[in-house]
Length: 312
Image 1 (spheres, rainbow, N blue to C red):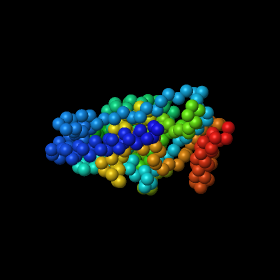
Image 2 (cartoon, rainbow, N blue to C red):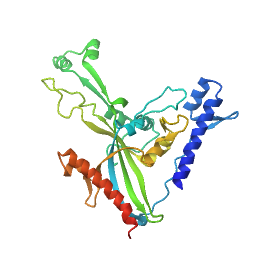
Image 3 (cartoon, rainbow, N blue to C red):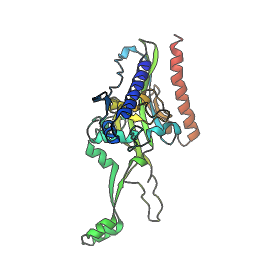
């Protein structure tokens, strides 16, 4: 029933968007309304903002079985490319930003406050702390030698010998998502609840670093967790930002809809298996095929949880 209601909400928002473009008096008016998330009904302009569908309270005693999983979402995969799609200036299609850019903008302007350094949600990041993880100033060896000689750098030398390294949106092509699969005893259903989402990108402090021979240093371009966001606090933002829908440009599908419906491809890299949180790469090291097989085994274990529900 909830899925049916959610589908109706998506369709309704799509039709509202269609009415806006059909009734706008000018492209400028349409762009402005779309930017302000407003729509036109007759002679009245009203808010187009929606509230995410509430999850509902889950009592601990109602969880028959559960499993926490951490997954990697590769934005190079075709099914995941809408998460990366950026279309800020289109006229007829909805303005869209990549999922990373939406989360970053909201975190930097304070719309999302529950932003953390890692998946344990222990060290909170301020907007300045987030910026510090995304930017790095690198001074060339020549500049260091000049400073060591006791001479100050000229303005021209400051420009020539200083590099500003920044992890930009185009470099973030991997996301992580953490959530719980559980069987709700009250209605006898297997459910999924996303709890955390993160962006992975190159560390600006090590990105592109080379050794004395001019070769890339080990780990120079490795991806790191840039920040983690407690997902429930991001739902209002994600429910009002939309995935590019190539099948119907007037039908809005929000990022919150897509994530809760799990319309993405992922690989499990960690799970709670009864012996603590196990990182697959740690207990099956240096064997990519076995790691993928283990990820698939965990997915099958989740499906088995639902099958077992009907065997009690």
